[in-house]
Length: 205
Image (cartoon, rainbow, N blue to C red):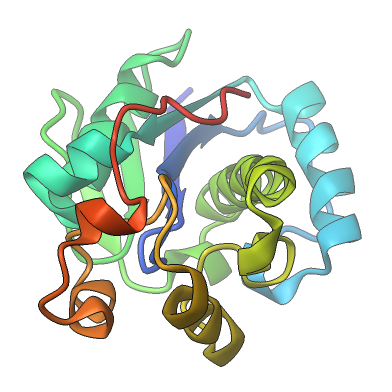
């Protein structure tokens, strides 16, 4: 029996916190209804499906790219590293990996990049849901630490309200200081004097 793994991330395009990546090998005899792109599901439905995926899948793994890795490697490099970890963390070695998007991690398993695969490949959809749920939980934790930025609503994306909060308060420890919109917003100011620093490991699911 050929085993196919889905691989997807959550948080790539945000201005704050880590990128989370999940891998998932679905059980061919234990179908899960309603799998689709996690962004097209309500938070409640994602939570329900995430628990079903964890119970029914052959195996799954969630990894992350830290803020330090995102700043050192850039977000693409850090995400590919997290993808490698997510595949290597599986308890079963897949025969092929289907990755959402354009880029492939450096793994010793045959892999295929599938643009918008989270909406067409069930294993990627499952991985998308797991990654999204894990990251959303992390952002709720960060919201408790830094409520002024509205992380419970924007999940780290630079919405208008989030940008206004950045202008008012400056960045907090989980903002990505190398992210271009934040650099431009801060201008030539020394962001270290505005409370922006590294050193917090952050949320650990």
